[in-house]
Amino acid sequence: MNLKRIEERAAYFLRKRLPEAPKFALVLGSGLDSIMEQAEVEQEVAYEEIPGFHGSSVAGHAGRLAYCRINGVRVLVLRGRWHYYEGYNMQEVTSYVRVLRAIGVQRLILTNASGGVNPAFRAGDLMLITDHINLMPNPLIGPNDDTLGSRFPTMHQAYALDTIELARATAEREKITLHEGCYLGTTGPSFETPHEYNFYRIVGADAVGMSTVPEVIVANHCGLKVLAFSMISNVGGLDRHLEVSHEEVQEVGARASENLARLLLAIFPKL
Image (tube, rainbow, N blue to C red; front, top):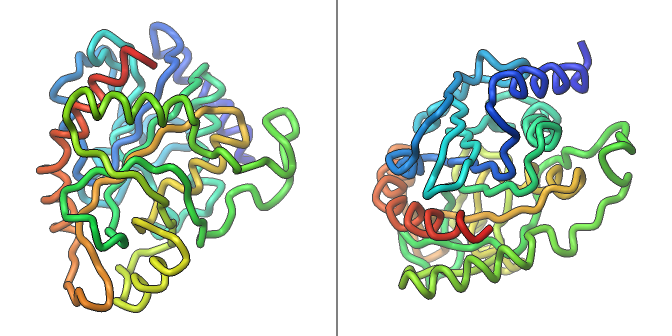
């Protein structure tokens, strides 16, 4: 069965399960699940039950889709994602984005845990993503579905300016320190060498990670507005020879996610 047919089945499955079409979807990265403590969950389903969705093999990703109310707003929450480095192709990694669009989602909010490239950052900081650099295979390679978007979609404002301004204003009002910067996407799963951190900084990155960019590309292709945040789990460079582990990423994420949850709780009613 081709991927488009699987996506249609997934959209049909979710439309039948959900009480109404959600306008917002939130994807939670590694260690960033604590916002669910503030959620009134109305429906929840394991990814494996949804056609074409996959259970995550990565610790810190619950692998469940929750339809819930957060601070008075109905939100579809994806508790984890699947990644290129797990062995899926890029079309599989990003397929869920087209499913969200098919069921009526208009805005996609992405979160991730990432390595800090900007030396001004510290572990536990939050970064608003304002642009990205893609060093992964592009998920739009292959036949184009003209009913979804252009063969050559523009990425000049891949992150919606109105939501960027909203995030800035909300962070200032809530007195949450929110850095801004460019996220660089790599395939993983190995963490970066000191010279790779240095190279990424030279080419303009502030943070580096193994997700998000493919989803942003597909979201822009099919007309979803994107807002995205990185939680900085560590900071690397030539003068920082750190041994990084996924367990450390989860631990820092758990500590930092309180501020991210506060920020999102304040943002949702104003979207």
